[in-house]
Image (tube, rainbow, N blue to C red):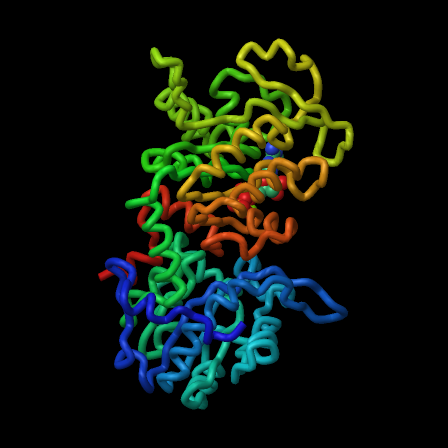
Length: 433
Ligand code: ADP
Ligand code: MG
């Protein structure tokens, strides 16, 4: 993909609210330091690593193109994986430089260092429109510590700073947060797009707005559910996340994945789930026989097995009495059941706005992938504006061959959820007016 299919006008007419948007004057002939998120999946081929999935790189191309047009000198920086503050060659950004050069045909040089004399020299040799990609920021432990001295050194390389890494903006790291103190700072084009799409969900979604939350990490998701259920017509729960809600409803979950509390045992995710369930319980059956749906829906049946690798699966109908659930068994709930999948699909078909994050089951295994596939298909075939986010959710729709059937796919998982939970993101505070 080249940058040409980028709907440029869109940004000029509707800049994201409150963000500092750069003008041509801000970037023309300047040295611009851009924080990107090039934390992409790589695969080892022979001795070198190759990019497997390049969406995040593609997301940065329109900005790079815009800067090049304005004769800027461009310095790109990113993290990759978790090298824990040490230089580890498996986490080098060099394969990304190769990708930018070969697949995107950009004039890129790669700096094996992040800061220091050699980098200064390379920057001084940059010509208009040329690009320098720095090595992995996380080779320096100062990055994650939001170290001001480190941020200052990064800042000294350039005239202005642009954050194009929405998906990393929930992290208070040096290249995301502290750096804002030392350079005029602006929002990147893709970042604006992410913020605008997500804001739209929170402020005025066209109803019915159906939200689907699955996946494993309830700690990441429960606050977003707590906030968004206020604007959504209904929240459909599945995956590991649903287990917390089932348990909170008093339903047996056996050996299913469960995240009862945070590491320090300070936040009980069971209590939080319980509170949401109670708030949203619908007990009244109206006189004309109409039964209002509860706002938070948990699976009415599940596909269960002793473990993720087991092919010995069974469908269990869930009820608070759980009379029909086998007792004393090593059982895990690993997918939503067929009745739930049907119910969720029926609701999704009627939606006008949809937000989906998190697979409904262990979709990596075919025996537990049906729920996720049913939901993905329902969303793909609905007329709703559909917003999808999360690394594994995107992997799932790619696996089912449904990519391209949704209105907007966010490359941000954690950051999007924190944004939707109404939290202030450190990376956005820096570039807010
Ligand atoms: P995303 O990356 O889309 O935000 P998560 O990282 O939260 O999603 O969750 C994805 C993972 O959740 C997948 O690896 C999937 O196997 C797992 N998962 C889904 N349902 C269950 C379940 N019922 N029990 C255990 N793990 C599950
Ligand atoms: Mg994930």
